[in-house]
Image 1 (cartoon, rainbow, N blue to C red):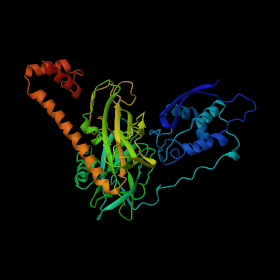
Image 2: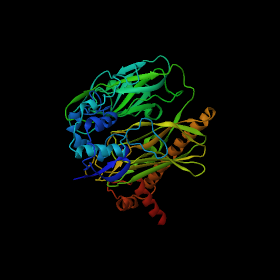
Image 3: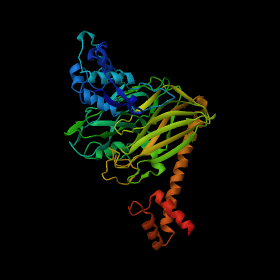
Image 4: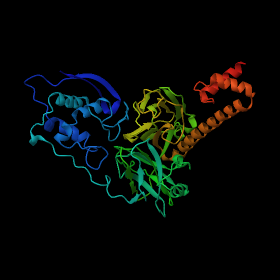
Length: 491
């Protein structure tokens, strides 16, 4: 009987339901592994599903694929594989992974047709993967000084590790290649530099390798990229580079997931430096700023669509080249759109199925030109309901903004250059002003909360909390406080 198969093309964003049939016609040539399936698997799966890479098992032979055929169809149907979450109907991404409908149909027909091996002579050669460093020998290689041991079972761990770089002069970074020592437990790592020495002191003072809380602000000013499972190191576009000040220490902010047995991680990082300074500076606008810290993220238990939005109008013509997003387990959907001055809408990024384990930094295939006056609109949605399989709380609990994995964050970051390098200062100042405005709004909101607490009689305050504290946590959230303030005005 033909199987009903719902597939999700390009890792989860183009959804369709189809009846896919293995042909019953005796004249039709059979679908075989060697001739039809192996080219698909080798092209889309083998880069990770091979020894010493991220995937838990290889997919390099007929036997590898044949015995896991049903699992392969299941993860394709669920949109979990191949892992790729960024979508845009208007712009192409560099290095996009995903299966076409015809490729999915071929896989299903092969399974329904008996998983035939076929003529070994028709088996294509295995892809030639670069062993070791994917971008060639780095200019600087550093590693964690001590291994971090993760327990066998328990909650995920988010931990920071400081590594001295001992640079006696400024460097310009074209690319960073991250190589986890134990891919079974490392899901992603974000990279920062610190020139204060605070991070290294925290690491060395903790009896366990690394330290728990960032706390020194480098996540705002010293970000230099990151890695997630399946991510491939990429060089910045020609003429661009991150500045790495002399005396900097590297911080790896790493997310670990227990594998079922106690394991130890020693991460290694390779830096690729430019021989000369960049020809043009680049910057990024993050919406909402500070990973959502200024947006007063406060997600009620049970809310399946808690949403924060932010907008920014470009003051000059820009060329965007990269985009990324960040959230924790409750993240659900990300979207960044651009409305041009003539009213034309463009989709810069949509992630409909946020996955904390796959946080890639995406590059556009070509520069995306956005004229002055373009409005960028960001939307971040969280799901704090029982229907979110990634929700770490059962039953759901109110979750606020914070740095730890059990807290929440949320933002989208667009990297860009000014089309006219002489206008870079105007662009950078406008972004700083946007952050300052968000910070002022956050202070004003805190002030309103304090006034509500300090300027009314205790008896009335208690009545308001009793009436408007809908989640019964003993205090008023931003939404609850607004309702209470409206009630006071009506009085």
